[in-house]
Image (cartoon, rainbow, N blue to C red; front, side, top):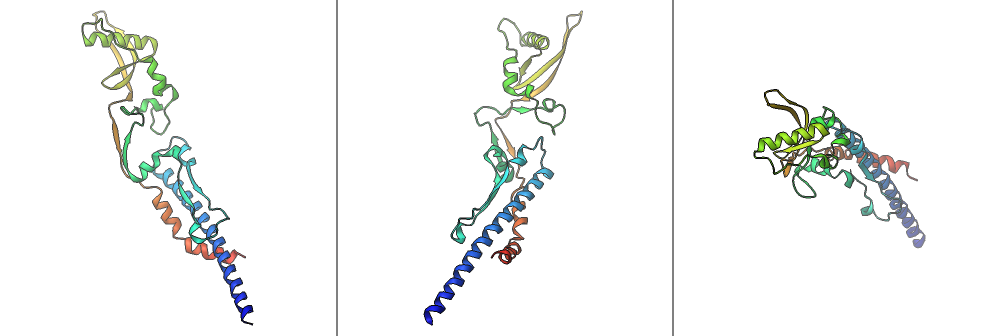
Length: 226
């Protein structure tokens, strides 16, 4: 009789453990999915998005069904390495050029006049760089050299570099008096080696809201688990 009782208790214990594991897996997956949804909403509401690349990179890893212990139950939410800049937004910090040197900061004009738009491909630095008109040593003054470069840039739809910025030149005119006039619009700013990103949390608040329902979700999953 004693052996039979122990066997029954063991079966109950194993069944409870199995149900705890299954309900726990379902719970963390549901909570993580909710946290991801909340995080995407936070980003959409509080950041300037020029396309859906960033929100696509906010993902969560599901906990698999083959775990054996409670401490193996885990699901993670966050941005992929492709959107690593979102970690700096969450925590705040310094932005530097990963290749060294100064940062390349596009002006509004490269976005078609609106910061809500992506930089046009024609204004990518790698596309602009070959079209930057270089200086010449044959001129006796800096002004004369600048005018010569501006003339070539306006004629060839190229660019000139002044004071660590790159400009697009247009409307080059030479008056009868000999005076030269032209328009220059800053395209890229290359003046800074780093910028400071202020802390702007989007993931932590999303996770906290989702976690508030964890106990209720677990209780529900225990009721549904056979």
